[in-house]
Length: 78
Image (cartoon, rainbow, N blue to C red; front, side, top):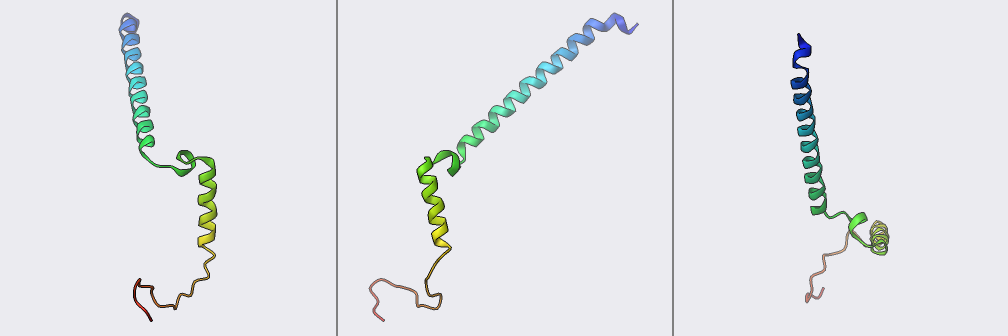
């Protein structure tokens, strides 16, 4: 008896698979568009600038500044 509806069943399954594939592609497109909106230095900066940024990050961690010094205010003499 189930063989009588085999063509209808196959058509329904095929439609569901096509719909799922369509939704997957739409979702992936949405994710790709969202990724383009984000600034990712490793992707969006030229290679040389990315290396400079890494060097600057390394320099900032090796500070020789006096943490007890008074705050600098332009135009004020101490």
